Each structure stands twice: as C-alpha cells, then as structure tokens.
Amino acid sequence: MRLFWFSLLSASMLPSLFAQTLRVQVDLSDAPRNFFHSKVTVPATAGPMTLAYPKWIPGNHRPSGPIANLTGLHFRANGQEIPWQRDRIEMYSFHLNVPQGVREVEASFDITTTDSAGAGGNAATSNLLDLNWNQVVLYPADAASDAVQCVSSVHLPDGWKFGTALPVAHASGADIEFQTVSLTTLVDSPLIAGEHYREIELTPGGDQPRHTVDVVADAEGDLAITPEDLGAYRKLVAEAGELFGARHYREYHFLYTLTDVAGHHGVEHHESSDNSAEERMFLDPTEKMLEASLLPHEFAHSWNGKYRRPAGLATRNYQEPMIGELLWVYEGLTEYLGDVLTARSGLWTPEQYRDALALTVSNMEEHVGRTWRPLEDTAVSVQTLRMMGSQWQDWRRGLDYYPEGELIWLDVDTNIRQLTSNKRSLDDFCHLFHGAPSGPPKVVPYTFDDVIRTLNQVAPYDWATFLKDRVTKTAAHPPLGGIERGGWQVVYDAKPNPFLAALESRYKFYDFSPSLGITLGDKGQIHDAVPGSPAFQSGLGPGMTLIAINSRKYTPSVLNAALRAAQDSHQPIEVLAENAQFYKTYSIPYYEGEKHPHLRRVDAKPDLLGDILKPHAD
Ligand SMILES: [Zn+2]
Image (cartoon, rainbow, N blue to C red; front, top):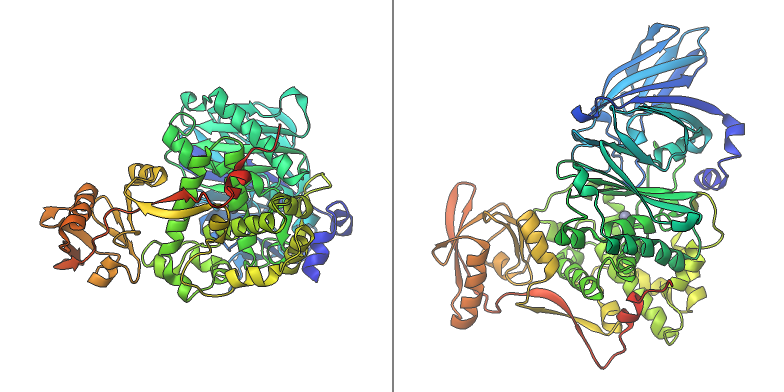
C-alpha cells in the first residue's frame, strides 16, 4: 500500500511534505573520452547521512544503475573533506557523518560511460553524447523521487547543440541551466548533444502539444530526412493520438542518436524517448526498414508503461526493487501497438509488417523452452535474463514477453473484433485504459485485474482464463490464434524473408532454425541450436563451429546449396564441425529444403489483420 500511496500522490503535494532540493552540475566537456564529471550539492544536517546512487532504472526494469563506473568520489562541506564508507551489503549506498555547522554537502565524482545504463556500449563518440541523469546523481537514500527537487545544469563541449524534454531556464553558449524539476522528472528526461544536430518539427502550425525529432549524428550528412519519412513521422503522431484518444505529456521529443560506434538502444520516457540507431538510418532503405518500429514502440510507451504502469514497476525511488511479472503487458502490448502504429503511419508497408510478424512467430517457435517455462516467468526473471547470450537461448528462453506478448495482444485484438462483429477493437481498450484526460505526466498503476476489468468493458468474455492460459501455462507452440483469426497463416518456403535477409547482411547472422534448427555466424559459429531439431538430434550444439558441408568449406550459401541438394538426393547432409579443438563429422538427415517464414492469406476468412493496419487519422 505504501507504494500506491506515494505513486498516487501528485508531485505538487509531496515537496511541501519533505522538500529537499539538490543542485546537479554536469560537465560534459570530456564526453568524447566517455567521461562525465558531476557535482551534486545536497542539503544536510549534522549526524549520519546516507546517499544513494540510482540502482533500479526505469525502462531497464532491473538493477542496472552503472555503479561500477562511478569513480573519483569525494564529499566536501565548508571546504573540508568528509570521509565516506560504502554500505557493506548495499553497493549503491554511501554513508558519511556530517560535521556540526554544515548546511550542505557537495559530492563530486566522475562517471565512465563505456557501459551506460539502457545501452550496451559507449554513451558518447567524438561528435555526440547521450546523458541519462541517473548516471550522474546521488540523492538521500530514503527519499521518494517525487519529493526531491533538482536544479540542474550542463556544460557542453564547445559548439555542440542539444535536445531534451527537460524545460530550459537559461542557455548561454555551452552552459545550459534547466528549470527546477523533481528527481523523477530529471531521471525521466535524458539529453543528447552533438556537433551535428537537427531539430525536426512534427507539429506544424504551432499545434499543442509540440512534437519534435531531435537528431544528433556522427556526420552532418546523416541528418537528411526525406519528405516521405517526415510525413510518416507526422502521421505517427496523429495515429497515436487516434489510438489513445489523449496525451500525457507537455511536449514530446524523439531523441535520436545516429552512430555506428555507440550503443544501440531505445529507452522510453514520459515526454521523450532515447533512441539510437545506425548512422545511415535516414539514408539507407534497409536500415530504415529494420529500425522503423523503434520510434513508434518507444512513443507508445508514453501511454503504456509510463502513464499506465504495472504496480510492481511503479516504485517510489530508484532503490526500491521492481517486480516484472506484468511486463507481457508493459512490453508485449507496446510491441504490438508499436508495430501496428509503424504500419498505420506508413513507416512500414502492410507487407513489411506481415514479414516482421512472420519472423516473430518463427523466432518464438524456436524457443522450445516454452515447454518448461511459462511466459510470465520470462517477465519475472528480467533481472537474470536480460544480459544472457545466445547459447541455449532456445531452451532457456529470452525476453519472450516482448515477441510472444505481441502475439498475445494480436490474439486479444482479433478476439474482440470477432466477438463484436468487428465493431470494437483493442483501440477501444486503449481509449479506456490509456486515454482521457490529457495532461502533464503522471503515473496510474494497474494490476492484472484492472486489465481484465477494462477488457470486459470493451467486450464481455472470460479474459482472465484467456490470458492466464497464454501467460502462466507451458505449451509446445506460441499463440497463433491472432494470426489465424486475422485471416492469415504462417508458411515456410524458400523465398527469403526481407527482414532476415537484412539481418544477414548487417550482422552476419544466418537463421537456419526453421530448417536445420541452428543459427550461425558467417564463419560457421553455431550461436544456438533448437532442442529436438535435425541439427540438434545429429549432436551439434552452440559453441561448435561448422568447418565443411559435404566436404566443401562452410559458407552460408554452401549450406543453402546443400539443403537444396538433399531435397533432391535424399542423402543426409554431412557436416564437419570443430568443438573446442576437436573435429568430428555429423550426419543430418534433413530433406525439406530452405525454410523462411511468411504470412499467407486465407481467403475463406475476413482480413481482420488488414483492418487493424489501416490508418485511422485524417
Ligand atoms: Zn519497450
């Protein structure tokens, strides 16, 4: 109940109860060396004091605060050094004893950003940076983040420009001062900056609230956007408005970092999203197709995840543990709505949407760990699963609450449409659950029962059993009811799936899972094997390397040719593989040729999926 009490109180009530104001000054001039300098001034009284470094990071849903990167820490008051001691159990807490007569303590420290929260890889390059404020603050350990006020500023590298949803109080050259906001809002408002910066206006004519894409890139030429793409992003704003029926932000910034060398990620916030993609994302059609759903996904989170948040993730500060069991709603529904918005806005064609969905199904069919691990357990286990590699992932499962959650919400949407003769849909659920009234950011927590209650308002049905069957039970196959009810079926044939082809050329990642049951690198490294598949049955497994196929040196195309040859000859494929310095031959009796996933129309059924993807906004 305590958690609800804090989350439901409005931010304006809390400061009067326990007003504490931090001053946060960040010097970003060393960003190209992946090194931020921070100074945090905290009100203090004499006696023991504990300051905390944010541990549980919103959007990460896990204790990912980069504490190991905190270096050069000093506490000072009235010019005197104050000794500190790290808590022996809680690595994110620092204890100090504040001397008599001291009114405020100044903490100074550096943060190395080679492994930043929310992203694998560097937070900066020679030309740009991505600042997440949780990296650079310490705060009173027991305080609610809504109750702490922050006066913050940054000093940028010379000549760099910036984008952020954080309201600016004063900007003068490289020095930017921001308006006083709560610690919650500060941590929710990342800042990007760079030598090459462009603000793209998405809300023409001065309409409110305002939407922009703020882009920084490694080169000036990367900032170009085609009129078609600009139109699609404007349409995305309109389609999201139609879908949810209200907006819960004062203005919205799509922060977009385009670089090949920093970490790639998307992290959601109330009034912005922190996105990163390949440098030539706006210029290269293949990159554009692969990244098209990133901004729609993170945008949908402003409603689903930020405004409406599972009670277990609506914590009072960054030290309180998060409970992930409803992430199949938080991320699964966002994955579904994000992809639907990608198609409705024209960032994907309906065919591209279907090819992406077919690939999702194919990936989930490989995750045979579903036979021992219910989907809900992948959400509960986010802390342990997030950083796991690919080896035996098919058997372990990964963050399946995203892709399998998407299939479940398509199942829900088509079921609502069928129950109501296509008069109602998941859009109606979104209006009720995420909609009016519009206003500034706030959090309205929910439980599983709240989801069921709202679904029943849209279309009465035994939704609790429907969802529990799919979320809490083990099964042999992913839920495909949405695709079937939508008037389509998943088929596998020799025609390449364009998303898989793009992933092959970008990552040198070759998916032979639907056929042989293995995923491979270009040097023959087996990334994973599907238990029960032909390759698995022959004795192959992740960690081994394919050397030769039917006596010929392995390449992906040699293996594809062998698949086709075996289809005609009905002779097993002979594979020479290396396993930790030892060589062995494996025989795979597989004769069904190449298999790539696609959706095929079932003419006897109405095309509900086609209806779902139709644009709604004028
Ligand atoms: Zn997400």
